[in-house]
Image (cartoon, rainbow, N blue to C red):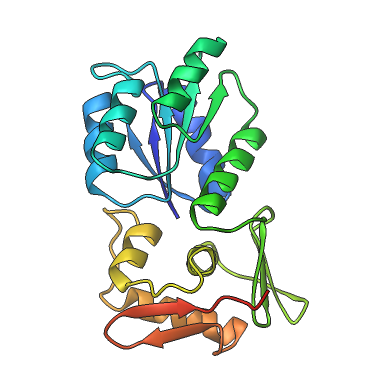
Length: 221
């Protein structure tokens, strides 16, 4: 899943990017407010991590413009200024969560995963569909209770489709969420990736809806 990281400090951005990539996320970075607003307003992301102290347009202004324009992506605010009044201002402006600096990377990842789950209507970190179970905390998959090794790209595909279980996801949306914009890929890259996952997790997990995209069905309660 693709995350927008809005952070002007190179050292902080490098650390967060490495942690997010290790956790299976695809990271797109913006260094200043105008660029952040444009990326968040025109491109699809699972969530945004937004620093408040940005050059040009500040983070709260970016957030307010997103919300005023109807942008509903989950937003986790980061800020070195951690007083309660600023936290209240951030939440009132439309933030979904707030994490003061300095922070533990494990907490950032836990909060981000929770935001993504809530946005997709998932209550827990462990998801299941049919014979397949996915644990987003440990980035692990199992079939009939037996562990199955997935490559990072295969994991991202299964995770995204299971996060959006019950909804047909187009190839374009999957391409945006799984690949960096400058990544060279074949036109049938998603089809090939789906084929690899089906060989590992069975053909009944990912359904094809011809002309529309792919679907993972919701498990019965």
